[in-house]
Length: 232
Image (tube, helix red, strand yellow):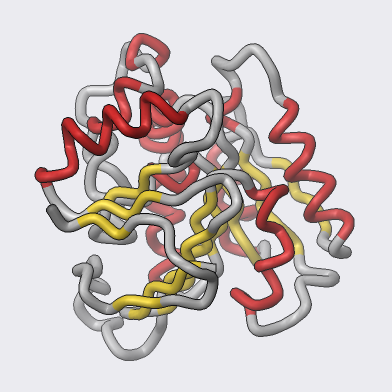
């Protein structure tokens, strides 16, 4: 069972496979992803991840995953966390934005953030809007990507393992659970964190043997810099 469970901050591994950088760009850039269960609980790791202060950075803030949910509390907490660090927020609702607005925000903003919510709905809307391809392009060029819960899960090779946590019915037009493929492991958020403690253990038991999986609690984050994965 190839699973990396919660570890001490600062631990790292290079054992898990990594998604390949497209031909012609390999070696020229380094993918940078900060994957969290709760961004507000781990926002203080952002300067370490960036190796710089995030002050005055503009964030393409994508709350799309939250649309099917009953509450947006964690989205507002993430927004406050960014603004408290001096970041500028560029709201980008990909389910309703026009293609030019999506392109401009993803290309011109300094960082990309995707919120928590329903992972299946998020993937559906990223594909439908064309944002999925643009996000891949920007991350492959080295732009920092910050994903919270659903926004972290969607970066992996497939999101189907999360159906015990997120109802697929929220995404009736999703014809494949293939993720963005920015990392080659499946990120399981909220490990042993209420109200998901029981379901995360069930997911580990059911899907843990299907390929590499990184499971983190709400107080942890995974930083990916090229081939290096670090638990912060």
